[in-house]
Length: 243
Image (cartoon, rainbow, N blue to C red; front, top):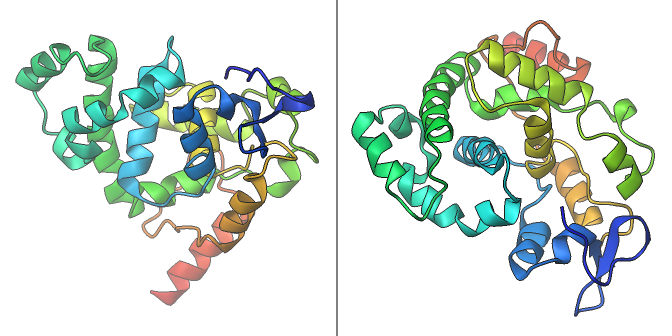
């Protein structure tokens, strides 16, 4: 993401309010709001998770700022990213979307979104929710950098878990879900806290993650071939024991 004109060392920048933030989050007012109010806070809402993964796919080859500024138009065009509704879209909807100047009019990405909505319906039915499925891929603490710095993030654009998520989604028939896309999704949806050390928002995100109740798969949709992290597996075992 773009650096800010007042960037400090190691990915930090200062804005007009004097607070230190991740430098990428200072390049535009839209980014400041997104960085401060959304990015990295843990999400368990299925529509938001589906929306983010779809928008990451639309971003391919573009900047996230372009997508962010079109997000409301995307929401209108894709029924609020209600994947059960999007799964019923047909050829007329594809034609409508290709004529919508408010979104990215890329046939392959549009058709992939419809396909992914159908796959999302299957996955939610299998796992109980999309959230329960995705949160299986939260990296264990031991795999995270000791200090989250700009250099550390640049050196690791993908992780073992994002590769595993990408492979499993592709196995299930999803499209536009490469490991880099999956890691950007994980960063945004709070599966990791990649606000750099010294960012004014990092502590708030970390507190939100500590207080966040991880959703649990209730009907056995663990990823293959990689098992879920031990903590997720134990949680599923407890859930099964309560039924």
